[in-house]
Image (cartoon, rainbow, N blue to C red; front, side, top):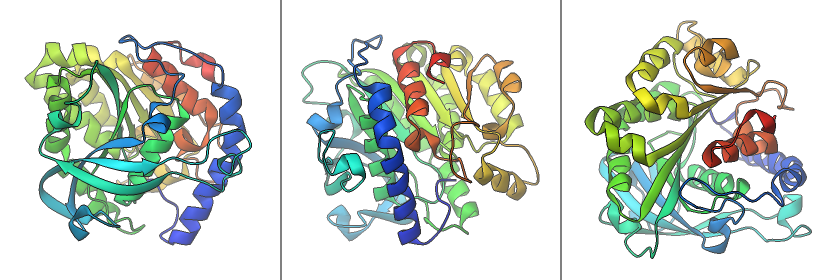
Length: 342
């Protein structure tokens, strides 16, 4: 789950507090680090801040013709929409308004395009792509801005994309959200196939949160079954943050994706209260995000236990609020040892 309240003011204030407390630590953890991914994309230059355009794929039905807020609503669309989102980044600088939590990313406009290949058509060289898949209880705009914060927070040097599935963004609509996420798996596979087919994309790195991990795993299973060699060549790091997925389902899926499995990094927290509630909804079946490290490592995965990293009572969105967890994501993308980040 991605929210602890259905009240917009409460959610906004909590996120603002998280960004404020994490900002100084983020600078110390990431400033001065320079690295190259396997395709040569520099991770020390935040591309999205320099060129604030976010790639978008969504299975939500457009609202207001996608020309004004809320851009896309909670209803399921007949087909996936591909677009570019024009953003305004927060004020830059160590002593700017952003450094004290008073300035944030803003979504200004949406420009739709016919297909995934059109998003990168004008690229002059190949670029890595960071694809973010959100979790439960999120609006389209919240998901898009979280993708921007994540990309900027890890100083990603390639293109950034958000895949947004239909969430009602209400605390009591977990069932609708979960079914909508699963319904979107074919569309996510279509997006991945489009990125893989584009000569402008190098490697595709995936970060999925909460229920979004279920959707992402399903799409990985499908694309690996259809084009295994190409998927292995083009898909890079896969990070599952606080995965809200049945442990048995996850285990069987890992067995189905062959050489992609060792590229998975799972961020867990045994004190994740949101996943405890999710497990209760699921009939008491443990979620992957609260599983013990040893159980997941037996599957050949990279595992980071973030139980000691959270300062709040929920501990579900540490990938956004905690600098060390963002460093884990950065290291996974870069192909460096992740255990040194914790």
